[in-house]
Amino acid sequence: MSSANRLKLFHEAVVTKNLLGAKLPAFKANYRVHLFNRRVAEFLMCSMLIFGGHELIIINTFFSPVWPTAGVALSALFLRGNVMLFGIFAGILASYFYNYSFVFLGIAQAALFTFFIYLVRLFSLILIGPVTPLAEIKTFWKFVLVCAVLCACHIAAMGILFVQTFQTSMSLYGWSVAWLGELNGILCLTPLTLVFDPFIAKHYFGKKGLSWQLVALAVLLSHLLYFYAQNGDQSVLLAGGFLIILCLYALVFGQIPTCMTLFSVSIIYIAGALSDAHLFIESSENQHTILVMLLFTLSIVFSLSIGTYKQQQYYAKHKLN
View (cartoon, rainbow, N blue to C red):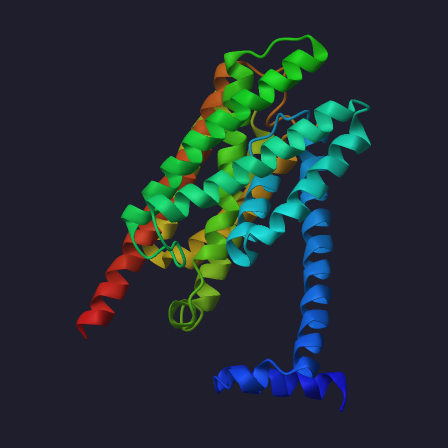
């Protein structure tokens, strides 16, 4: 009997709760091979994604309004479980070894980041419970609070390691930029992986599908105005305007379109941190940079809150009906 047929029979035995049949040696061996191959593929994929995301942060010298690594790592952990911690650690470690010659720094920072991601998931499950999907606004705000507190602790510990290694200092401004960047990275990506539910997806990707996609494209393109801003004051005004626009967008289209749009918009902010752009550069006035990043964080939190509240109303209405 072929390997594929044995695996098929194994799944059929499990579905029918034929545990004695499922424990047959031929099925167990086939299942172990299948599980091993799957775990190896997940490990490699996770490591590569984490490595690539962390390289973007290092290129920007940890000065970025969005840290994609944090969102990718937490999403992987929520979706595939603690086994993904190995891939997260390997990806971060490879990135540090690729850019720095300090072995202790790479191992310590990789272990610290992996432990931080583990704690976010652990405290989310303990204090919140199941977070898939984000069906209640209370759940979402608890998730934001957990992420904000743990991000603050992680950035502080991360800064201490850099200070001890390079004999430098870390300012409140540097800590604030890194804290907001890591928090934004989680809030821009992780909700997108937690929000999908077949019932709700059918509702949103039906009649309103083309409408929210066209409006999302317009919102995304409007953020390119940042690159035409002549000074920090104009950037702050644009950030305030985008906060209102994203909240209105969430009010009209709901949770899933908002999550997908915020993920797309975050790419603009990542690109704005590159050295050739003038959106987020270290020569800008600190107060303008912090204000723009803070307004972006508030845009994420408020728009997702509105989208989640609207989603909660939809669930309640459906339950009543």
